[in-house]
Image (cartoon, rainbow, N blue to C red):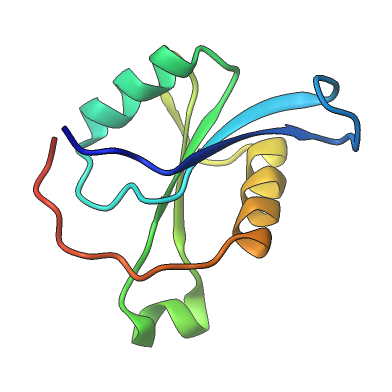
Length: 103
């Protein structure tokens, strides 16, 4: 079974267990949408984000792709998940995406 790198962070606070909780999966390459939705249900937080790395030529000018899921659906945009994901990416070492078969 594939292991996923993830962080659970508290957005809008500097105090643990305060603010808005968010799960950020930083190596979601190759995960099917259905699998992302199942993982978001398992975390059972208001939102879970999945970072999809792109080729360097695309990522350099446009950045990574971030998908946001609630326990029920995918969202086009949400504020605290966007800010929380940016914070996690800023504080972690970024690794390129490798082709990984879907789970």
